[in-house]
Image (cartoon, rainbow, N blue to C red):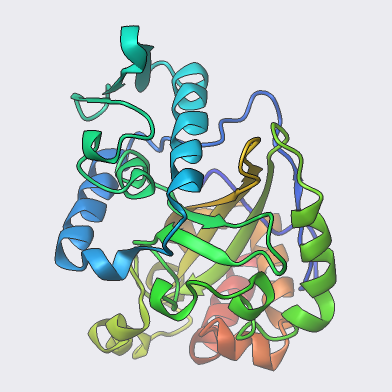
Length: 308
């Protein structure tokens, strides 16, 4: 079962759904069952398309370095089972990834001491996608990112664009959430991370869903019925966090993607009923954007038959 079930109401509501990260919650989550596989998948995707999946605007290096120097101590402190950090004489850092059995020594701000750009290297240590916005500039433009597991978009189409421009394709976002989102982001305080959960229904367990991959899995929309929708349709969750860096004002946006068959997430009858009610009230334009329309009727038939 996935660690989150984001449906708190009986109808679809377009809302930010943001809350403060609790002291007992890690900013970076390690899903131990899938960690090694997903980090290896990231490495292979980056090897196949390094300039597609990591991009940064010139001058973003200080923001990237601060993100590294803020997150590594935090990760080592919050999750010592999986990570450790030592700061040696001369300012050299020794990072150990205990899951992968790897060790990296580097000097912050020294570009030659890491094999990749700072944010790119950091992204290879975690399951999350990592995006950096410039929190000091109007519009909060996206200035750097490592994005391996997107849901229907890619960095090349978003880098350098403002926060609102990035979300233009999302139906109703600008009108309903644009102003609240900007206020939230601009009001973020260093050391006070927030989190939210986004959801979608997909027909594949595949994590990397860039637009050009669609021909490879489009056929999975075919043949979905009330009898098999629970196994053929997947609940895709994005556990997102926002953190402001104290020195540069950069805003780190993390996305940890989880995927599981719908059937495994709705074994409880109340969960089945709630998901069915939410899906029945998704506006048509939002359903089309989420690629929900082709599977909506058989999935509802599955959920409502099971709940009955």
